[in-house]
Length: 229
Length: 301
Image 1 (cartoon, one colour):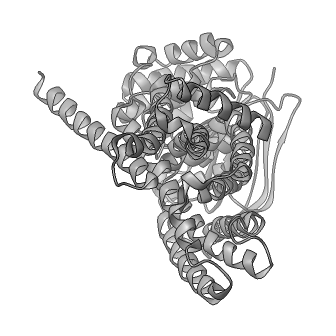
Image 2: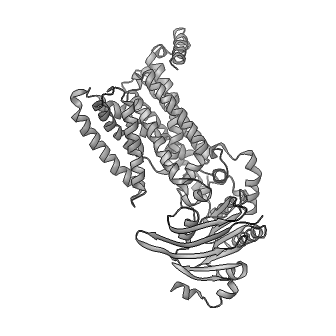
Image 3: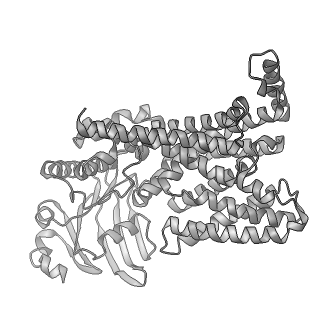
């Protein structure tokens, strides 16, 4: 199984009269691990939201390939009312099944949900209130939900922003495992060393595409300071 | 359906006649009221959990106020002034959709926009009702706002039953998607949820539920029953199942006790007020319980 290619074709996006993305075009190869880098406010998250169909834009965003299966998405943070009484299991049920989450995790999903939580090292937290978890623990649960059902395209919006070192290591391992199985990974990442180490390709964005290519080639000259300016 | 209601009435009245049930059950209006509460309690209790999560607390109040305009339009169009359901449903659904449509095109928060629409709908509805007041009983406005659970007829019960079935058929398969759409739209999109469509569906659903309950318990009480049981259940729940079950149980018990207690104890309290007071007592109790438990946990007792 090889995940889909992702094609951004002349994507322009405006918010409140401000142009966030300006004629952005690039292609992510099927089954590749692709990182998107750039300064804060440069339009990376907006691009991801447009990819998810959440933001109106001009131009085209297409997925091409034989396996257009489930999309796994890990947001930067989950902005929600922490007082809503939901355990980690409730959140997994909410995100992974059709049966109402208040009736519990369905039998057919039970083993997969447990496996995903175990893989992210948060199985022992499954009965804890989701709102009571630390930022890093919540992020691990969010990552676990993206693993069920098994995605063909995994979209990560700075998933390690609030995660401690062991958590970040697990994220890295899981991403590499999935990518080795053919899952296409689109990863907004601020850690340039990690990008150099893991990514097959990288795109630098600050409203426009600044560079695109293999990290060893394009990141040699494109420094973070240049990106910020 | 009327035959089923009749058979229930005859059975219950028989049980009351031989002393198995309290004397109050010999009255048809009490049986009708209790049948309604058995639908309204679970319906509003379950829907209330989503209203609380979506922070749409005052939406049903705004719809209730919009119903005043619906009543006035119905009277002008020649509908029965006691049950102008066609105009109420039509106008309130348009009102709810217009509110959501406006929300997607402004930067106003949910509660601010609902507040604006609530004020407009009350002013417009009251003015229009006053204009047509020569043709109607002046208690119509009071009836829309406060309802009259002891005066429901089989038509009101049939409408409530149909709306309850529609709500169950819509909410059960879409519960997760609707909740997810309000928790995190991006995550919902990634899961293939059509966020905007579902938001409109939810608004229409709350609107038809509110209108179906208006004549029975009134706009003020609909809002109270959507909010207070869910808020009380949230105080003492740690899980989603506890939250939903608690809200349904509190809402249903409040309705039943609110109907029966004033009659059994001879209290000079209207039924609607009694229902709200019972649920409010539960809310106060759960709030105290939560605060006490938090203090114990903090002190490590």
